[in-house]
Length: 190
Image (cartoon, rainbow, N blue to C red; front, side, top):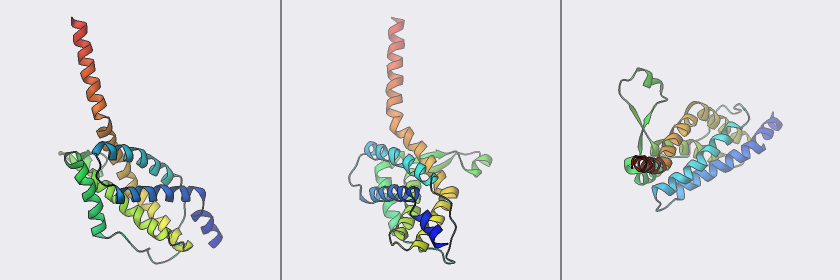
């Protein structure tokens, strides 16, 4: 059993996932004064890579009976989400369309870019904190929980927030395109 766990935990796909997860968490912890466009550009590159690497992680199962410890405190979470919110401000809220409740709702359901990114951070940081300690069985269990949360929770948040970030990133381009189209159309009239 231990050899099988080592084979999974130290596999190329898991190490690559851990690497991207560490980059994501470190970026959110350490970005300073930044513009929305710069942050959005970085996240629209990092999030698809994170999704890809998470989807390649091999299946595993828990070994220990106890759940791994949670290292991200409420203060940590609030710090990250407030940093993100301070960058996105008026653009932080977007319409959520992939919720079960949406089927029965007559009003739009709003989601928050900063909270979704913070939720992803929370799961990844809890995972990498245990993984960095190097205790194989604990690493395995943390990987299992992180992947279950990916399937059920933060994977969907990732693709949803990526949709919102994509819209922010390319909104200027589409606005410019519409203005240029209108100019070309008006030129054709003359």
